[in-house]
Length: 152
Length: 152
Image (cartoon, rainbow over the protein chains, first blue to last red):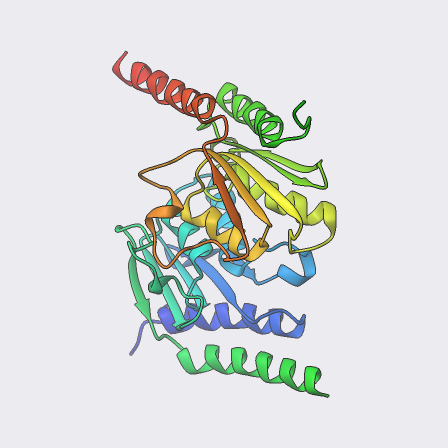
């Protein structure tokens, strides 16, 4: 029998956040931060709602997690995010130093992995490709709908 | 006669923010954001006070400026910051797209310029070295005091 609280379980929670973003007309990215199998913070992209270019899912979740834990370091935590973080969010993860980053689908254009030297803290291990198809599907739906709106 | 509202003038305002950070025991970095010769937002590093790893001067000022202007893009604005931005803040500047970034002293260890491809948006022009000595002096004072405290 599999572990109940595994990466797929928490990524499903991050995908719920991404779906909420999609419903609100935002680029659908969601994140949850987990410590000892407990979700200590959730966030979804809110750039349009807040008209704040820094209001990415990861930034909102990191701020909320640090606040919940009373600690600027997220040691012992795992950050789940549906899409590969951008350099801003990778830079925030550098300062927050979670034990792990788990993301769904890669982002060839804006993903942090294009940059050298690497942007994450060396203490942070990375797992990718968890629920990749679902995360990518949400992103595709957003951009397909956007194209239809613009062409219509 | 020189222009009253020049880069040195606004950098002095950013240095005031950095001094406030120093008084509060924070790494002394300050920022102001200027549109049409008017300061629309100010910020200083508040990572320790807020226990928030994302609470750098630039992030706080960008969020405040976008809020003040009701626009996620800072077109037409100049961001003044006393120290070269880190990758997180450069990544935030990428999304905010100000016309200009002006910074005081460089940061060899954590500055965004070490990274390729470049982290700033190509639309953002960069000026550095404005009031460099003053910005560097504040940083040196912080780290000298920290060393004394640790050694004492």
